[in-house]
Image (cartoon, rainbow over all chains, first blue to last red; front, side, top):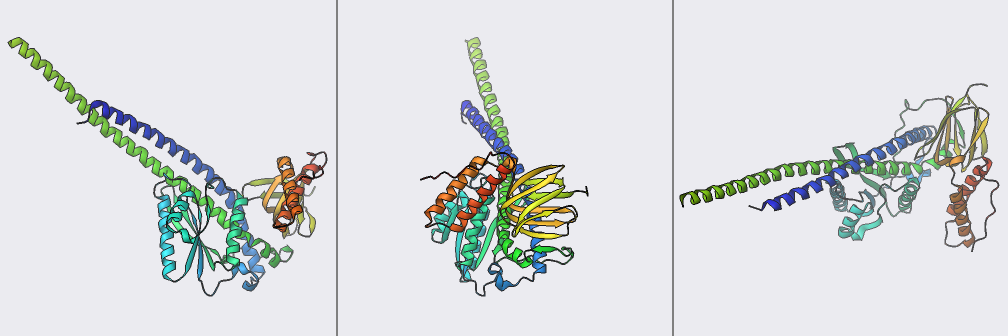
Length: 294
Length: 146
């Protein structure tokens, strides 16, 4: 049986760990709220944007041939996969889940004879793919989660757009963690390019005549490319929300585990303490008895 | 006064303005246009430029970077890539951005001219708006850097 002092030391150590995990839990909760607010702010923009796009594509008869970003390639040979991960660990299986999903996707695409190459955002994913898929890793963004602004997103989207338009990629897909609830985040794949114009259902768009300046098609030509920015930005934000949620849950679990461990260790400690007291008592009693008899 | 119009200026990062105003003037792709209350439905592409709105006799200036404006049911929505009210403009930063853009344009080679020009335009608009709102005495001349 370990000495009393060792157990005591161990308890103190676990208590300190618990303090840290609890603090991290609270930090994650605060960050989660902050990013959620940002995401909601952006939703106003994104919703309005979608509304405009569907209105414009309805009135202007989108003709795919004049919008290269809408064109589907007949043969998909090269796929560009964008993987969003976190910069930091200690968030449960968050990064692992994303990476596994990406691996599955890569394996499947390769099985179909397609070539895949990657853009990875987040240090965790970057270090993994650098190890395992160095040959297909095209571009890496690190230390950016929580620091990016819309200008950054615009630049990143531009690179993806160039990759598609130059024929380097026939398709651009995006993998991110969809936020379902604080307890559940799911790796989700989404097509980015070619752009799938959202089915503008006639009911959604009011039928009132607008004045367009310049022509509706021209406006659409200008603003359609920006819908990649909108998509990318909202996914980045959502991925960040998921990360904080995952970390919150992970740290909450860790705190609880610490608590259990402390309870158990305290139990062992008290038993050991009692045992040593009993032993001492027996020694005293034994000694006294010997004296009396002697 | 014939009522007011609700003006909303939204950027990806925040809601810049949401206010009942008397008149809005924005810079469309073909030049400035004004919107008064009860304007007909309109959808207009904006270029990087100045926008201003009048409310209770005072005029507020804004710098708008690209976007679209929609007018519908007495509400004008400006979806911009970036927008600042005159009082929010970081004059120093705009000055630096202008210098940077000019320097790039002077070098001429190995640069994305369109991008440098766009950056220059953004900086100029910000300075102009700051000047119009009385935050700058005059737009300082460009310094000829090295």
